[in-house]
Image 1 (cartoon, rainbow, N blue to C red):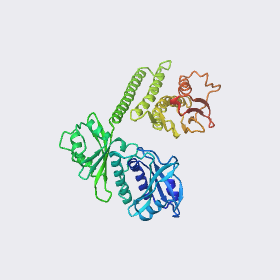
Image 2: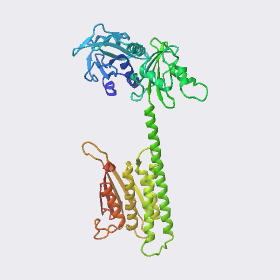
Image 3: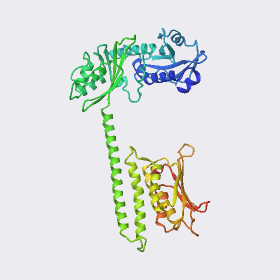
Image 4: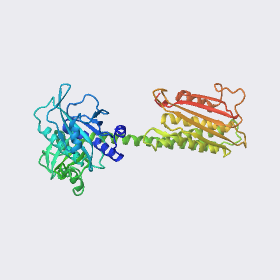
Length: 495
């Protein structure tokens, strides 16, 4: 709609916002009217109309089998549009149109914003299944007429009350019509059933809805006056009524077709099951975060025990036992960092750049500040199944560089560069390319990655190639140092 409005009309952004507000609400008008709605706007040269939005009813058959959005018609071809625009009033056609052997009644409703008419809503009713209307249908149609008059007068939709069409109650969910005093004139079967689930034992018709709703809502103090006013339909508001075993979503729409409130519409929906599932998800998320928190604590405990054990071994002890334990402390610490991050998130995804920077801090202790570690590019957000092994890979490669690329007293820089390509239909799965390059002494002569006996590099190969489904290589860097490269599929966690 934005593109069509900006391309074909002279309407400004505030007018476009008003049209968006209207479109967010007009499913209600379509359902109450049993009719298709098409929004037509005059073009900037005034010679044509362009259709920028369309809505089909959920309560009846459609009048349009094809999509009407984007159609252009010259002024004069549809006289109802001309009359509604020029006169600023609702125009009804005498005889129905015939479309593919289907009779269609057409009405034109001007869309007014303040003092200007922005466009016209064409209301198209399929008359093929017309029969003697029931009381429900008569109430729907009368309510639709009231809303149409409010649109023509510029008093509907309500400013600042934009409602998402996916979450707002619809006409079929439950419908009440109140008079000016808030007394129920009509209640649909679904609405009556919802109030019975709240505990009402009698019919709703004839009852004052505000006080009745407040009495059914559990409370420990005085009657909630705000709920009384809302359920009486005095203002456009939404709320939820939690009856313990039942949760009802309620929306009030005042009817002011001629400026004065003559009554209101109340739409309601039973959202008990939806709220139950939301509570289950919240509980599940909290449980998962707590598990990650406890895993992190346990890993930190293991790291502390290993560190204590390492301190008991003399630095001059043979066999490198102390160094091995310190390496194990760093490996456990890198996993703990991931679980700590996951314990603070609502999903199983982490911002890996934050984890990378924390791993750098852990490695800085190993180099005693002699070797600077810096990052270029971004890892971005990764799944937990990718982040955990990748943090260990990064720890091992950095540790290998710091231990073997520089001698005692040497200084230098280790640069970690990350770049990623997102998945698309052409390239398929996205990739994450990571290089760790140092400016140290370089690889030993005859180095063979496949035949190395280094435990750290064996861990890296196993994690990158086996668990992450990627590729790993080490080769001389142009600067004379060493470059480690690992190329990972972004969807590795879903393999």
